[in-house]
Amino acid sequence: MKKLLIATALVAVSGAAFAQDVVRLGTEGAYPPYNFINDAGEVAGFEREFGDELCKRAGLTCTWTTNEWDSIIPNLQSGNYDVIIAGMSITAEREEIVDFSQGYLQPTPSAYLALSKDADLMSGAVAAQTSTIQAAFVAENGMQVVEYATPEETVAAVKNGEAVAVLADSDYLKPIADESGGELVLLDKTEMIGGGVGMAFRSSDTELRAKFDAAITSMKCDGTLDAMIRKPEYFGADSPLAWGDAGKTGC
Image 1 (tube, rainbow, N blue to C red):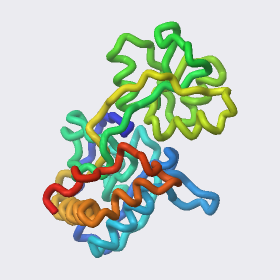
Image 2: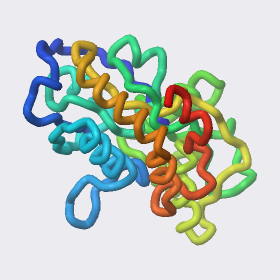
Image 3: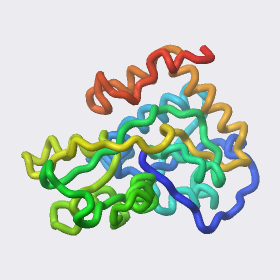
C-alpha cells in the first residue's frame, strides 16, 4: 500500500479496454511479495496469482507487462496497458486521475528499517521510494525525505549511510530485515498510511472495472482471497491484510 503518484501529464485514451480481445495488466515487478520478476524472467508474486485468478473468473484473456513506478499511471492513461495491479494504495489524490476497483488488500502498517533500534529519524534523511505515500508522509511530518526510483535503492541508502532509515510497507521490509543477519532492523515505530490496495483503471473503462470488481467480490465471498493472502510465501497466516468477516459484506 505503498504509493502516491500525482501525474503531471495525462494522455486521454478513447474506447474501453473491455472491448479488446486481450486485457493487459501492468505491474512494477520490483516489490516482493506483491510483485517481482522470478528467475525465469516472468512476473511473479501475490499479485500475479491473484490477477490470473481474477481474469479466469471474469472470463478475460490477460497478459502481463512491467513499468517503472514513477510513470505507471501516465502509461496507463496513454494506453500502454489497461489495468494497474501493483500494490497501489487507494488515495483521494489518485482518485482524481484514475478509477479504482474495490480494495483487494486491507491497509497495512508502514515500517522504518534502520541500522540500529535507536536510530533518530530527525537526525538525517529518511529514504522512501519516489511518488509513494511514504515519501509524502515523511515530508509532511517534519522529517527530511530523500527519494529513490526503486525500493532496492532506498534500502541501499540506509546501508551506505545516505539515510538514517527507510519507510516502506512492513511486508516488504520485514523479509529484508530477517535476511540481513542483524545488519538491518525494524524500528518499533510504525505508521498507518493509505486506504488499502486496489486496481487502477482509466475512467472510461467502467465495464472492465465492473468485471474485475465482481471477480474480487467472488474471491472474498468464497474465502479464496484470504487463503491466497495467508500463504507463507506471500503475507503469512496472521496477516492483517486478510479480510475475514469484513470481506463477506455483500455476499
